[in-house]
Amino acid sequence: MSRAILYCSLALSLAVACGKPPPDPLEGLPSADGLEPDPARLPQADQEPDSGEIAADWILVGYLGAYRPGRRTELTREHARLRAERLCELARCRAQDFTELARKFSDDSDTSSEGGRLGVIQPGERHSDLERAVRRLEVGQVSAPVETPRGYAVLMRAEPDEAQVSEIVVTHDAAKRYTPRTPRSRTEAAELAGAIRARLAEDLSAFAREAEAHSDLESHARGGFMPIFRKGSAHAKLEAIVWRLPAPGLSEVIETSTGFHIVARWPVRRIEVREIEIRYAGKGAEEAPRSREQAQALIESIRARAKAGESFAALAMRYSDSTSWESEGGGMRRPFGRGTELFQIEKTAFALEPGELSAVVDTGFSFFLFKRPR
Image (cartoon, rainbow, N blue to C red; front, side, top):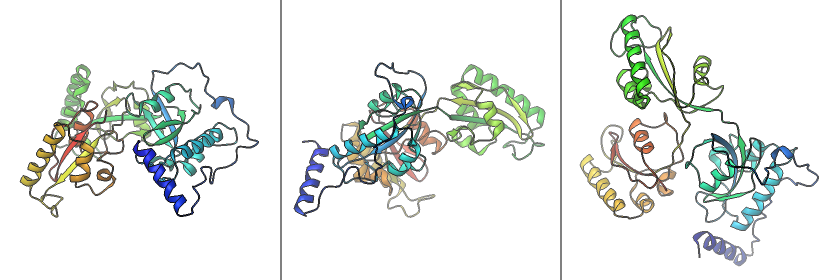
């Protein structure tokens, strides 16, 4: 018997024993009686999968035994399916707005406040059944419920409107706003920016190294990466550059009053990894329960056990010093993009192949170990 079925059986048994009726799967949902389906939201059976860039919004219906089911955990798997079917029916009607349905009824608290927004989905980034369903939709169409490890998902394909960008700014002594890390004249700054741009034209993958070495922005410590942003939410001049670039793509050197700018656009990508954090006494963690040497010995022993085949999730739940949801969920982090974490963490996580275990990462206050799910 699977864990999900076992949990559901136990829940129903307890409800019966306590004289409590099982929850109504349609509780709180509007009636679909008299609503007119919108043909534009209905996928066709013979639609071919789209191999290009895709984006989606979703409504999640969790159930007992699902992984991180979200806000609603009292439903059985069968009741969750019935609730998802009603939400699908509503989402395909003219009189209903998908965004509002997601805000009110999605069990995923991470996305419900944004109308169920998942954003751009790269190959292998989400559960394969979820990605496959989105690829068979046209923009605005709504899928039938799709079962995932987190519960049943109702998906609407959306227009991709996100960008992942990194930037290098080489400023000079007479420029506004930014101060050069090394004093230089405008002529020297122009020459340096031109040389950087020429090297990147030959090898764009070196952008992070060039940013770390030469950019005068604070983001140089993150390889120049900015967090993923939506169209219309960034500076207008930056967006005018970004939306003209392919992904990946590189701008020319652009001079402004703040210096010389080089912008790269990348495919929008988020990654999901499991992590184990072992803190040690030192900068930013004076209250840690162990010395750096003790922490290093512990993380190395954990890595050896994980490499030998022991469950990474179980090791995370037993040893990780994280006080958030990460340790409770077997160390699983929510998907994240570049420009949001320490560069050491991002660089390590994004370099992992599915199923791969990382080397130990030392951030100066904790040791980290990562594993990418298959």
